[in-house]
Structures are given as structure tokens and as C-alpha cells.
Image (cartoon, rainbow, N blue to C red; front, side, top):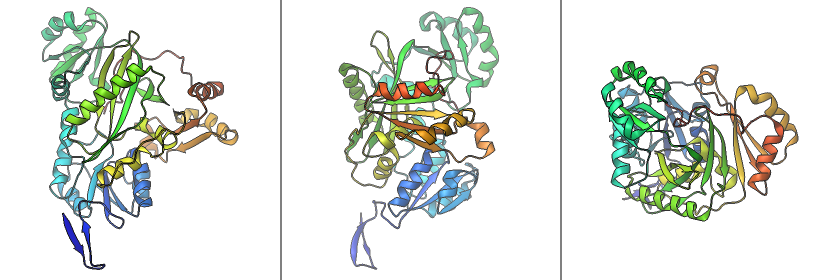
Length: 401
């Protein structure tokens, strides 16, 4: 749709987010920081909505609205001040996005969130596309667990149908004697029993999707410990056949997903070479920070282009990069590396004590090197991270809300 700009007498496409317009960001995780910077570099004003004004995303914004996610009056006031609104993590409830979309443009939409926040809808989406996923069964009673475990097998994990309820609502079942522990959990509602895949690597494809085109970032390998992201490696060390199959599956998902912006498709790769779709994150994700140095366009910049209605940039890999994420306990060692490393790029998160309690990561480092092995060797030599330390049970490694 074209309108006339009376000040200059030219026609302007009001489906495009232009310099001088206002982008609204709902949520205030570290994903929002890069998005605020990308928008302001483009001459776009930024407003942020969240329940805590003491976040870095809030501090960087041109204006901020502090309110609960169920405060419809505040949400409406915020939406009406913005030309476009985006959510910067998958933790925002889909109902909030639907409400905002009634008052302003939300290019991402809520469809993908609605599917991926409900494990039954997510499974139905995967089944519709005939994707290879971990075997699972819907559970409403303890008898269901006993009946399903024969086909699901040990070890398995019991998870609420609705995502975001936290790891204390989950149960890893290693033997039959563990099943009785599920009795109290099932009082909360419907669950999903899912087989735990003995995988060798976790891999991800990041996709930028606009109304007219799609761009793929290089495939990355993610390493988690105790359900927290520890490292992201690009390019992933996989053979060409696995690379091609991941891209084929991701394209099929993208073609069937109603969504605009950056999203992640995560996979398990087994020792025998089988690929399983782990999940889809319909938002930016911390593993994508590696592209700040690894490619010619960052995750935040590409997301902004997609939701602003601009042409997407063709993604080009620049060099191997390993991103490592650090906790406050590791900061002393990180500051030593700050003084001596010329190929390390440091990002310290500006967090309040309350945020530090909720999210253990204090920042991340991007390590550039001629090869992935050289980057990993440099990281290992510091003894700050121990990639060879034993990890927790192979439960799904996303941090549950």
C-alpha cells in the first residue's frame, strides 16, 4: 500500500519500516540488545515493553513501557506508539502477540508461537511434514506411562504438553522404578513422554524469512551443559550429505511455517548418521550471536530487514568462529584473556542482580581463527571451559521457561 508523504511530496510504502519510524520490541532478553542497536543504526526509533526496566534492552531504548504481559491497557498504549512490533524470544505467550496484532503490525505473527509453545501442536506439525522426531506418546495418567514405555523405551523424559513450565515439571525415566515418581506431576495436567535420543551432536540451521525470500545462515554445532548453552561452532564439522539433508528439511519447514523473521531449526545427529528434528524456535536465539563475526550480516540485522519489509542480505560466511558463553564465576579468567587476545571479541551482559539469578550467563566471547580446531584449541588452553567434562542426562537442552 502506498501513501503520500506530504512533507516531500513522494509516495511511501507504509508496509516498509523506514528511518524515522518506530520499532517496538516486546521482551528484554539479551537478544533484544543487538536488535535495538541494529534498528538505531538504521535511523529507526525503538520502544521496549517488559516487566523490568533495569535491563540493557530497556536502557538502550528511546522509550520504554514497564508493564505485565497481561496488562492489556499498557500493551495497547505501547502498540499504538509503534509502527511495527517484534518479539525477541520464544518466551512471549502467543495470546499477547495476537492482542498486539490487533493494534499494530506484528510481521512475525503468532501462528508459529502457538504451534511451538504446545508440544501436541508441535508434534502434529512435525507429523504433517513426515519429519523424523523422537518417539513420543501423550500421557494423562500413570497407567498411560506404563503402557507407553514399552514402545518409547528407556531412557525417556516426561514433559508437560505446554512448554515453559520449568524443568521441575519434568521427569527423566531411566528404569521402571522411576515411573511411580510421575504420579504427582500428572496432577498438573497432560504430559508428553518422549524417548531420549543418544545423539552425538546438536546442530542448528538459522533461517531468515521474509514475505518474498529466504536466506540460510551456515549450519552451526551447539554444545550444552546442564541445559545451558556453552558453545556454538561455525561451520559445523559435518559431512556434505548431513549438511544437504539438514537444509532440505529446514526448507520444508520454512515453506510450511507462517512466519516472518529469523528462526532456528535444531537437530540431533546420532553416531550412525541419523537426523532427528529437536525443535523449532520461532524467534532469535543466543546461538545466533556467533554470526556477528562469522558472516557478513548478523542475526539481528537480518531479522530487522525481514520484519521491516526490506530485501534480505545474501549470507556469506567470512571465517570460522566459535562462540563461548561464560558465567560470573568465569569472569576473572575472561578478563585475563581480554588483556592478551587479539582475535577474541568480548560481550559482557549488563545485568541486574535479579537477572543474574534468573539467567546464569554473564556474557559471550567470539573466537576467530583460520580453522575451527585452532579456535577450540585456544579456548581449551585457557582452562576456563572444559568441553570434556561429563554432562547431565541427555534431556532436551533448551532452558525451559
